Amino acid sequence: MGLSKILYGEINRFNNRYTTGFTKIAWKIQPKIMDVFTELAPVRVYVSLNRFVINSIFRKLKLCKDNSTENYPETFRLTENELFEKVKDIERFDIPKDGYWMGENVELVRDKEFLKRRFVDIYRRKEYCLYAYFVKGKCEGYLVVRKTCISEIKMLALVDFRCKYLEMEKRMMYAVVKLARLNKIGAVITLTSRNYALISFQPLTIKMSKKLYTATGDPEMWEDTNILITSADSDLDFVYYK
Image 1 (cartoon, helix red, strand yellow):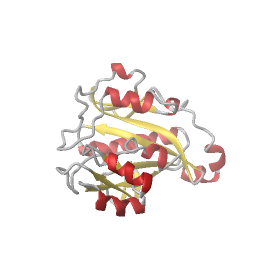
Image 2 (cartoon, rainbow, N blue to C red):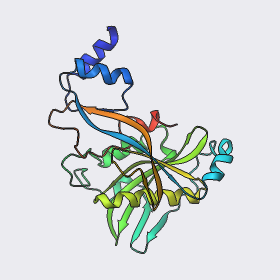
Image 3 (cartoon, rainbow, N blue to C red):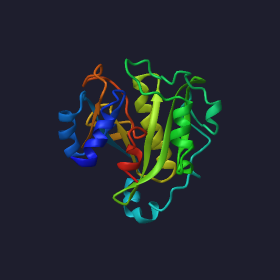
């Protein structure tokens, strides 16, 4: 009705769109009025914990006022062969020219233009920290973190990540848990369309019941398409948590 009908009409003109985090009413309406409405795998919410989790709960009010990045080291290692190095200049970041990292059938572009627009050329740029991921001296991916607050409990958010192999994704989560420990933060939140186990270890990670439903206007995509979506997509970084 009214303005909403006009807005949906404009959106309907484009097939190369996707949306994550539908409201309940939008999830019912859009399939009826859009020419193409293809459901994708939902984005799921994961929480990883470390030994500071109790500390974070009891100090929640104080911790939630701190958005500083002073405890993010220039470099840190997971193993002798795995190094994370802070990226200070995206122009000098070793990144695939086409912005496709994983060699999957469908990927959302993560090139220098996207990274600059999403994490540097915005009003909250000082809150983000980007690390390049090196394995045996070769850049195999990156991650982006920032501090956040949910129910007045401080968490470190894995906002975005890319890596060349699926098995490396858990290494990304483990790395962020290590960063959280350095900041005495007991929990890490990750939003991703990957469907990991209900409970996994190294790090201890729990899949929450929450699902953020996702759809696209592209008729060539289907429900089990293994497309990686993170908090950096569809404004989830600003909507789901602070």
